[in-house]
Length: 80
Image (tube, rainbow, N blue to C red; front, side, top):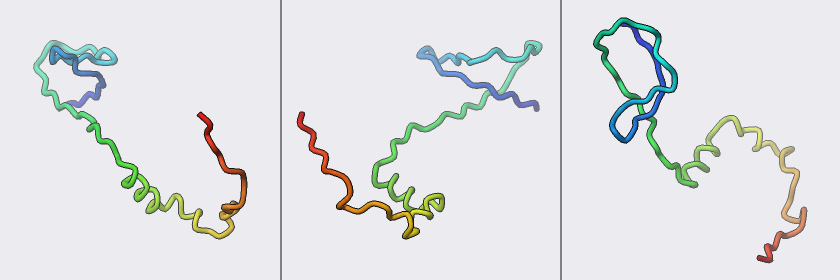
């Protein structure tokens, strides 16, 4: 079997609308496998746990990165 990757959307009429045309192929039967991204909303706590455990942010544990204190800056008071 030959695989061709194509992207598109499923319309309300249950028809697939491809972003780009398929390569010219002779008329033949095909097998279609749909891979749909799940729409999962990540909660704030899960996001914070993920970031805290990510080694890409390990440099933030370095004491030299502690350049600000609670005494720095001015409080922000939104007057709306």
